Length: 408
Image 1: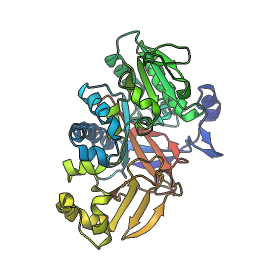
Image 2: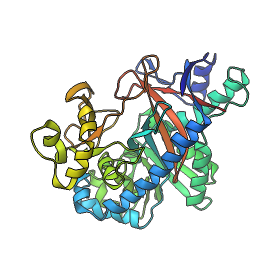
Image 3: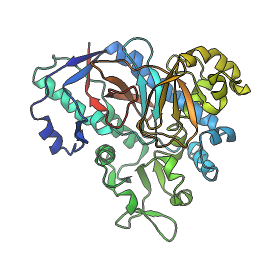
Image 4: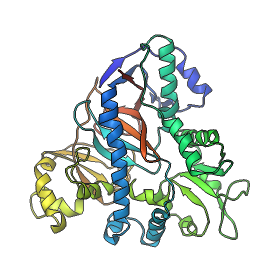
């Protein structure tokens, strides 16, 4: 794994504008950055990223089957009691999943380490699936990259196949996101594009324009019944909205399904460690309430995790991350080394939520930036990667998206 300086395409900003990639620059800073790219070997892609991501997703599905049988875990993951049956029934019905994104720490050597799973509403889909592929084709055509250079990116094709697998031809799907957010719209449009290519109808409606009919069905802004709804709106918020009580009786199939609320929650991390302790792609993780006193050196851990904590205590003491179970873009995350905070997010959103403790896996540094690898799951298999880098140890909302390529 290397970071290689490359010439930018002369007219890429015009191209971005033409295809609706309106957030290539954000807040006066570059978001899409092709002044350099990350290079991987085929072995690194297949053995260190692709296969482990697919295996981790299978483990996550095992975790869901376990969590829905445990009221205490549902409580620890802050699933509202009124909607726990909704979550569990969506799993028992095998409501289909479309996509998700694992975030990995990886430096090209040794196992990639799972930082979290963005399993419900992951963004950066368009730039991962489409714009970085166009970058590869253009750089090959210009001779910037040698003939035979590839990219681990079958994301769009996998999405087309997944939509075709789940839904009958000519089925109508609806897509929604919060109005006025170009990045969110880019994500749902990338999904809608794949659905249309699979022979499905894809209709967009702003989230705040969805209505409820007299008989309890969801309607779009043209009063059409919504039978299938992809919502780029997290379940942790939806389950606390007034509309949540209408979901079960609406006859609407939600994408991602309600059971994904258990995977997009960082409470998943200690559940995975409890179930698969020592797995090479996992970091030791615990609910803070179970180990806080022991970690601070003035008490004992919860009896249920005492043995596992004992085995991980030295690693956690050397470095750990404290993060809320519900958090986005690094908000309210703190990193500790030897008991001292070495970095924390200035964004204190989500600080009211209970937290997890996870062993610290430092991101590698390249030219002052720290990359995190997003491994995209479509259906139940890894279909490609996208990369973001940040000067901070905590990847936040102003991180840069970087293209990648694969050498033989």
